[in-house]
Image 1 (cartoon, rainbow, N blue to C red):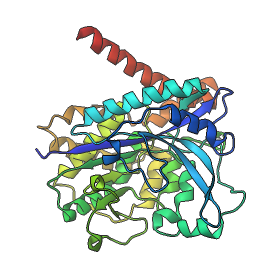
Image 2: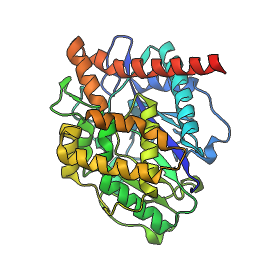
Image 3: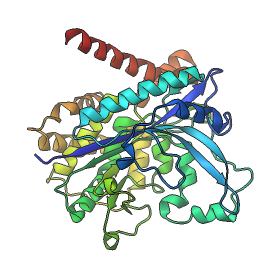
Image 4: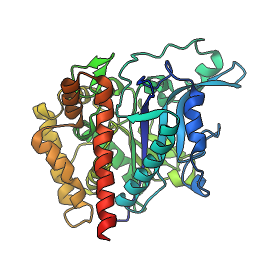
Length: 384
């Protein structure tokens, strides 16, 4: 079996000590930045994690925010969104999940001292648009006109979602792009396993994933990082991107999932992606995502027969490709969700209806999943 590497980026939303959702309307960026500043810096991470020109991404945690710049390009302030956790690159799925769990636990400890509690959502449950005061100036507009992703960057300011990354040294650039096109084609059947944004404008939305419904067609489902500029494909949204640091070369990043509070779901999704890249039976390929199918998935999930049958097909194919692989067992949570025709959003909706509280519905997934994770770790320690 080929050697793979894995990494995860996970965006965390918060409520403050008054129960207000933390965003650009309610919270100054300095309050969230103080959390990041208290978190540790690990020497050597810069070899794997891109810092960027502004130096904001120095750590495994960084503030997700919109920078406001002067017409001369000088930094003025930031509008906060949440805090992103990035793992380093790992040779197996389990160690990537372990690092994510440790980083999340540390973030929660520090955030609590600053009056913040993590909540699960993949779309801002209260704000429906980003109104900038003052409006963007000409310098800021030029920065947002460099690529299809830059031109739709403002739309991501209301969304929260993971980047699930995998790579394999045996992939050629052509094979890497082919696998990116494959994941793009089958994305509508992958994403329901993660749905977690059933709220909009402070109340229940009509479907299961506002994020998927609104971002489809604007943003990539998968992004492929390559070193050869001559092999870039020009599409809107992009499928290929020039690697910015050596560690990005050959990376396949799946970007279409909602955020998960239960990190074992990330493990399952990474195993599914791995299985789909190894599978040689599924013929579908697409350079840009199918907006119609994503929106059907966003509204009804696995209750939509086409989405259900597509999910069955890809999960079966991935399981067959991983039948003799150590990651086969990681697919189990996906089989369970599919058998029940459930997505994580249904549990959030159920809790909202039981409590009548949107805040409780947002807090509930982390309370349950992280409590279970703590119990698992405690049992592991007790038996070792």
